[in-house]
Length: 150
Image (cartoon, rainbow, N blue to C red; front, side, top):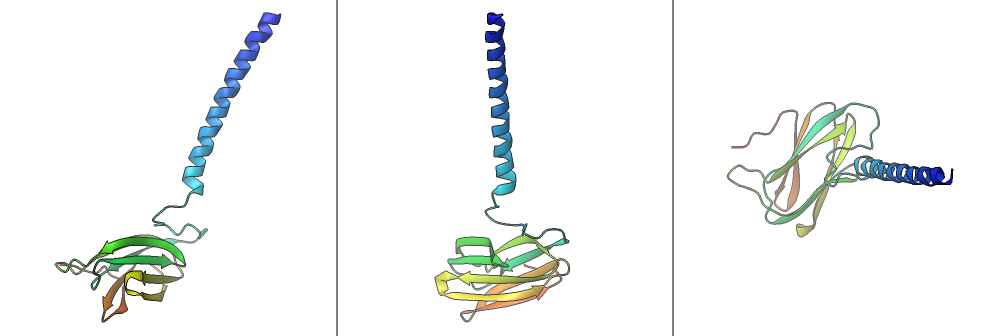
């Protein structure tokens, strides 16, 4: 009888060890998938329910070795250093995010030039925003159609 309890105890210990490892793995997966926000935040996940639509933001002309930070509703969605306009096509960089159908505030900061500005957009479907720097001022261009670059 004593021998049986010893074997049973080892078996129970092994099973508990496996369960513990499984739960640890499941918790890690849950943590990585649901609790850590995306570094580029390409999805404004704070919106529950409601339809999400694409917003494409093109950094167009006027950038020269600049640091650029973009925020959508105060959530950072883009942060890059040393970006410059490719004047062969008239575009610097772009990002596409999913946003709710609603009013969205897009803020751009160019710390390398001490520039900052924002625009409020009423999003009801796919939307395009072009941002340029012209005469040390930020210019916004909006469209329901994709910008063309050559």
